[in-house]
Length: 281
Image (cartoon, rainbow, N blue to C red; front, side, top):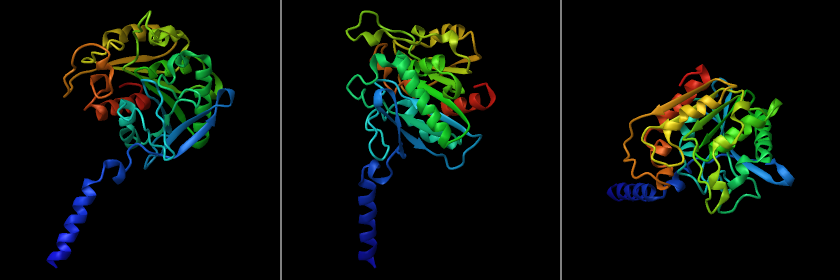
């Protein structure tokens, strides 16, 4: 009996020692492929909630290069630390269907989407994803873009029409400051480069008071909301964080900082859900 118990202990210890991915791969879901511009393929991981509440779907547009490098199992091999990616379980708990969108097949390099984020063709590609998602999960479809992903969300919301139009937009840590004259021209882009006045859907803007990222100062959210003259918008500043904000700069734009609402993902996801359901964060 003692030898059997010891064996069970050893097996349990070995199981606990396995990497988390071997136990339960995080943020993985079936992959859907959509044909987009010039015959390219845009893939997204389709996450279904245990119970779907209110027929709402969220399309997540991560920041950085936007290149998730989804594997065949729908697991992101890049950007797994992005705030929207980390928040997938919270959105599912709210009853939302979640589509995590990867970069199209011709934007899989180091810079990923780069300047393509402001291109009208990029908006059209996202429109095709919206239509495809509506066919799989009927109901409202909202776009949620964080950091540089906010540029993609604004681009799509401002340009799309008809069945391709999203029902609402969520911008977290929106990229509101570009760097003119940067070595890579796309670094100069911000949401202010797009026709914000053309957006007709409700927009939620969420930033963090402790965000030291030079691209997303929370103090500019009011200016962004003022530019959204064609819609109802709410700007929310989140306060309090367990992480030290660090020095202002590009390093502060990483996901596991106040820029990515680290430690407050549940709170922010719940606020987003409230806004979608009731119109107030």
